[in-house]
Length: 356
Image (tube, rainbow, N blue to C red; front, side, top):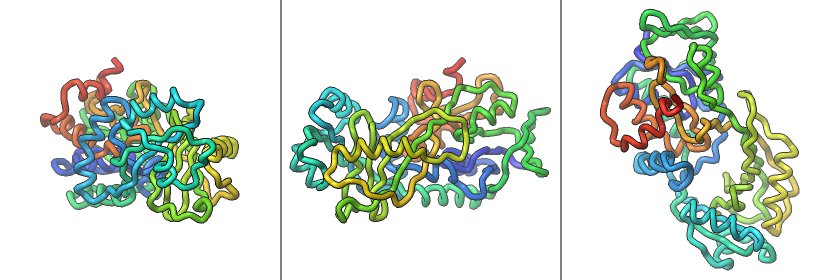
């Protein structure tokens, strides 16, 4: 018996569970053998406060002090690069992301492999930072356990039932009971809702692919910024001496253990190669994750409009880690009946009741 069941052991579920565990007994049910197996384990691991819808940006800004104070952040920087024919899209991007135009020599100082024959525009933002995502997940799980809660892995929920004010979730031959249930199932959020007899909200997983390539031209890439093509058509980011390159794909798919498709990766790598002097000669590895979006591409946080004992913590898209502290606090405040520090307009923009 527990106070609150949280379905999903990614960053959404674990951060919510950690916040709730300060005042309630919480049990996390994770289907896979380890926490953070799906989207959370395949994140680009960056916080850019100007990234996302207005309500997402509010959560970003409300989270950054906690992320910084916890020692989860390290300098990275973000740069947009564009060719001459991409000027309109470039200007739209710099307005959206709040980046500052820089001269092309400075851009090539940041990333020496940028092709001077192709590079026409560049803009930079120093405040983008890497996130230590693995330590965040482990710390959230430790908080749950320290406060008397449990994190059950390898526990796939097969059925759910609400009867006489109590949820029963069955995992194999085990039953878990609680008065409150938090749906933090990521790509499976709508499926879990339907399993519980709750109307789905239209949360759709989208595949995002990634390739790890050797450092181009033998360069030391550790201090390079993350750099984007306009319209987020591709991006590249240093990673442990290698370079991650993504086609920034967003193909809607069914929930599954995602993998990268060769053609999608090839298209993204070709766009990257258009902007650099060093061709991609081999892949070190490749993978894909699922970014799940609500119809309006912002998070869904709060009690269901019809069944208040069912709480949504879903639709994180690509913003899960950078919003986690503030999103979890908002969720805990609502579930525990406490006032929130966020403006009512933002709370309403994140609430599942907006879909009524």
